[in-house]
Image 1 (cartoon, one colour):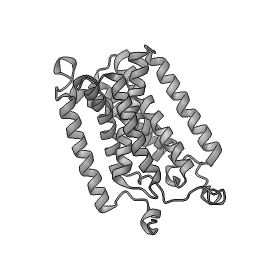
Image 2: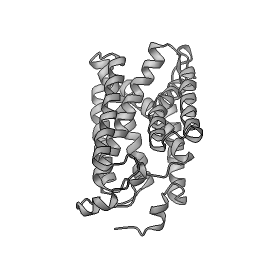
Image 3: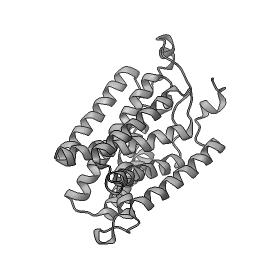
Image 4: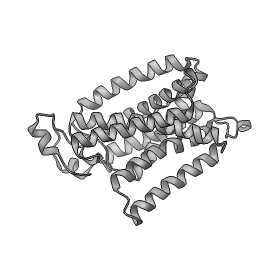
Length: 270
């Protein structure tokens, strides 16, 4: 699962670079959950509060994501601000894709959850068949990075659909839904540490589960008290979480605490 095809990539003429993703630390998971929350609240903010509507919001955020990914792909190494900007935008776009299918096209949540699950599985199958690894510790070619971001997009879309399915169909409410997904993530961590659950699969399962966790937290904070929330609103919740993300990204940019060991010891390429 973690076979390194870096050398073969060099022989095939693929552009080589330092690892393009951060080290998976506590900072990574905290920012990831914050990004998923912003993905939920920012989409609602633009769609409902600003009045752009679902379609126009999708066009705008999709265009911004394309621009961010162009710069991300052009970078030769992991850049915290650029990477996490891409994650925030892809979180919003993943949410909007799921919402468009559900709200505009009336596709049942059971169907969207299944479709995104199959799409993610298909991405992993093709990725592994091509690269012989799904590890995020070896994102050093353009092709691997393309697989990585496609998988990330589907994890957000899948997490949105699955989270809405649990919260709405099972009627658990925002807070209890967040607790359920937090327990599932903890179970994955325990299985990895005590039952030798594969590290790569542990990461991706947890990555999917953090999406509905963050969305549930965002809804709990932003929705009115009458609907089971704290009533902070989408503006306040989005601003708060974006400020925390910015602070953490600036801290990591300065300290380089989430730079992989390889990137830390390798010279920067121009």
